Length: 404
Image (cartoon, rainbow, N blue to C red; front, side, top):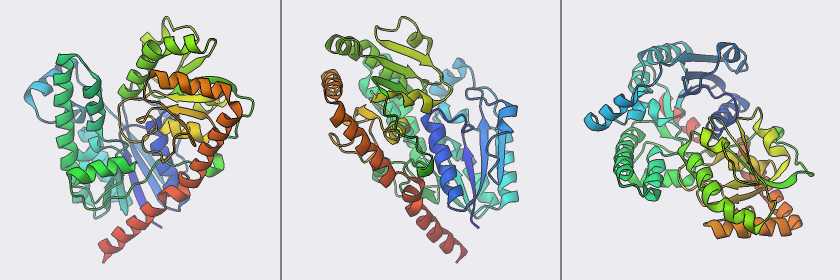
């Protein structure tokens, strides 16, 4: 039986946001394929999970361990980093000696065939892992960090912020390029991310493994869902934050004027206070909800007004799997092999949102067929069995060569 140790920058619980869902999907993909899966997670202050909860999750794994991480530095530390160091401040918060000690101990005890890092920010632990084990060490970036800051830089007009964003982007890009080529394998989540990696560096091995779903647990289609729109996503994510901010302030006033009485519901973890106060007419901020599936269930339309970022918008794929009519920007549908007009409604500006919403409301039968097409696409291309088959084949090849 193959053994894998998956290392994560936060505990993948609860399953309410794209990052946790993507990590959990990978864990389940390996487990359902018969691998012996162990998990080591940072329990960070920002996403802290209480001990009584930790003791009740991931019991089906061979081992699940975690390390409580100290709070991040003060704003002054970030300023010092910006002025005095080349390493991004984002990286410094992830390196702690207690976590390295735990990681090395688990590698020695488990003797895994594969160690998989679920973030490039965990890369400073790579030398310790390689000095302890002959395992294949893989990096699975959920997105390219520098691409997020590239999008923010392109959209921001404040000259001081542009200087800062430009610096952060360069530092992150240099950091990522250094580590991509240090791993035995890189496992990007989208073909576009793979393209950007290959454009910049020659890596040892690479295979795309998109986010996948468990076909057996797909939600049933909710045939009496209301023809209202929704969005859900972790809201301290810059792409989600700026996307919803833009949609409410710039697009929504024109949408509600063009489609009176239309409604938009939005939810997510770490919802900023600004979104909960003085919500525009027809919009409803629910903050963090207990169940993302329940939130989606009775709403027919999912809107993804995402303008920056990278990787795959996991919540968009979840919405397609749930049989929702998806209205998305190019960045919102990024990484999903969906065709506009067949699987989703494509939008590029405010006028497109108005056009798409009007079409959906005027053509419920055709819109429902589009939603069904999207759900079928998920079943055909994004289940664990289909999405991870190529990854397992590549890992088998690497492991065979390692033993040889």
